[in-house]
Length: 131
Image (tube, rainbow, N blue to C red):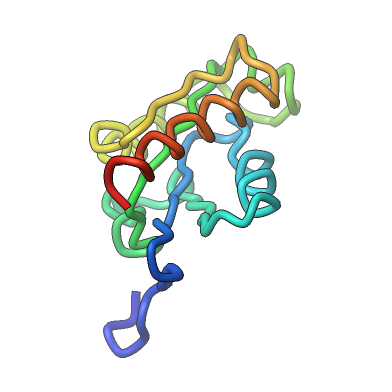
């Protein structure tokens, strides 16, 4: 991030929510759903970056949500010309964020609505206790 340019700023009393995870985990879908509910949320394409701490500088997130997916389920959701090793590389790039996330959700067996509700429930609890 450019040191002369300020990062995202949340409205007073509203946390900035960052969403990270490998391809096909459901990040874009979750971000859209949270934004539709008036949440201040950032889609962080960390899986494509070699900068392990990109999620910290890019989003300035107060709450970090990590969505995960297995290689097999990712391929079912959207066929991509990649191998299991490519997924492992994404996992390596995301390790720093995963170790520090506030909420980890494996989306393999969840519907879009279940993922959305899981995250919203967590955010409601976090807001009640912190913000």
